[in-house]
Length: 259
Image 1 (cartoon, helix red, strand yellow):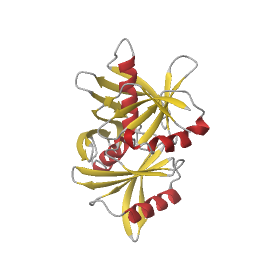
Image 2: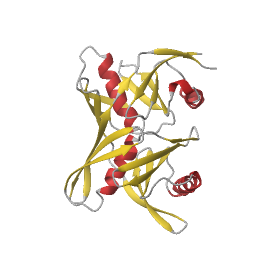
Image 3: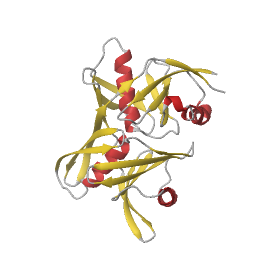
Image 4: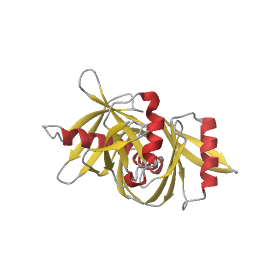
């Protein structure tokens, strides 16, 4: 099968966009094959679906939500349009509403509105307690330490699955402004130590602001692939606005053959 793809690079979290139509039941298998193509350096896959009304929807490989893919999708739609709109509303998996992406073609950046956190749960492994920020479509566990072994990550995610069934899980190792993300997607059983993670950055920002009552809080989170800015607005202890952004590049369209 020949597929048309574009490769997006949002702060190193390389996302392969499949531009050709395919059946949703084939998405996991297609994704696994694309992620095995070392020359693409992909960390995740998103499928661009054209709807009956001519609009576009972006479906992540496991139906999860992904902030970096969302802002890259907004950048892609602006880039391909005649208007080159600075504000693009996108329809993506893992979000019940359309999200606004602010695109700056000159600076090569995109910032997206993010779904609000649903709650913060507590998770325990070996008598140690960690905070887990729950979003629609993905749960992020915050670990205040340098990265630990894969065995530790596996145990955390196993416990997270038990208490909070979800499409995807992240473990964000946080050392002040330095963050190392790991993401597991349930349907593809893929575990990736990512170059950056948009929704994980948002989870970290929500966690870092959890004791604040009212105000706007901005966090620069430096990750292996680059820096992401995460914004949280709170009022009376409640989060009412989340945004995250950073650099994006998108390749020309190319063709690949898969089985």
